Image (tube, rainbow, N blue to C red; front, side, top):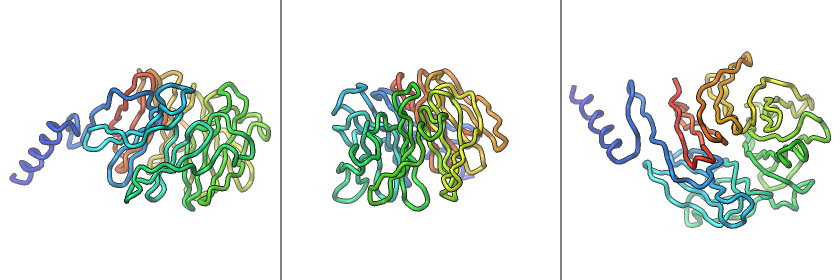
Length: 291
């Protein structure tokens, strides 16, 4: 009885501090973060800190930023970015797809918050147009989608090795179905990468070893974020229609939540109990408690 009372007191203290919104059936429901400036992507580090990329003014250099959320409070982490979008963490570094380049930001130590260019625009096989999502693999390589002109031209997926060398994975010239790849997801083998297309709303699976591109599911409108749960299901966000969907192993699509102004690059919390959804136009970071 005393143990239950202590747990209750602890949770109530967290609620009072603004760290969580409420507790339902012993499940912590996180509080929505508001007042963000065009939030596009989100990722959670092992220590629980949540990082959000904020574009602010589209096409305006220098006004983008990375915000860190700790104990329910949002603070500026890195400023002076252009149009920061996709985020990924490898080791102690946060990687950011920032317009036509990929940045690397130290998350720890004396150089915390220091920004360096990991892959400049000139290091890509072709000049990138709209670098969007980031996805690491088990070997420490980083994959980045180029959504092109967002109308079907210039779409590509690139691989960046740990030394910053960029190589092409696939583009629209090789396969006409590659229109505007956005959300990326790597399988455990490191050979198959999935991508949801912003123009067609189709989820693809691409085997980099056999060079085979297959349709997995469709109906995602402006396909944006893509994440995988350890139970085998995937989640996909639809930026254009403000929705989040789940996709099971059979490829069946089910709507999870709607009503967003623009559901952007989603991510799971480390415990996989919550789906984090940046609502770009609303300037909010929402949390969906998963069953």
